[in-house]
Length: 311
Image (cartoon, rainbow, N blue to C red; front, side, top):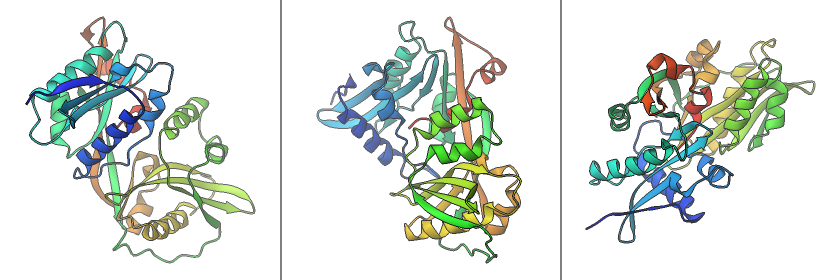
């Protein structure tokens, strides 16, 4: 039976996309909670319906592909399809979506997306289409159900807050981050559906702010945002301990951490029982007047934020 393609028609298509992506990635190791970047992009001035392409067999959605753009930079999605539709349909979706993004009409120059190292089919597809590895970062995870959290005296006031407050995070992060880094963080965090935050204070002074997400269908939680007062010792461990207890109450199964936490925190992770479970891989491709540039040139233009964008 023929499969027909169509572009974005209205807000309900964002729900279709999110639902399809959730189902397609449910069995993939260490898959993150869906971001809200597709919804934000669809409401922006730069949005074009041709950035989203849906494949239907009669009324049944069997695949889709999309991208989110920021000027010449494009966070290019994978052509997700139902089992049995791999191959030709994926090439049709890629031709439609990437073809438009790379056209002179849209003007995309730098294309990138992140995957987990075990996602071999997705990585192989992008490499066949000229993408190369740009960055690889370790992923550490804690089995929340079997974790034994060591008891330690807590000399800080630890609190759990719903959602995420950029203003509070910025207050602390600005002590150690440049304006450029803060701007990139603000853009990224706006696309994240945070579930809760953990703060640490001493005499009303903010010492730590951590933001967490939980993917409810798999129980995989992630520590996404980390801001610490680096002049204060031993503030991270009690925050993580409180976060684990909160995650248990929300039926999370694993807590993953990325590069944001690893600097100077390895010993704390080991003490709490975190293990290296995977890697986050950034793939990118750069074109200039239709010509792909070399890997070194690509690395200089891929924004750091791409490793956190896109569904």
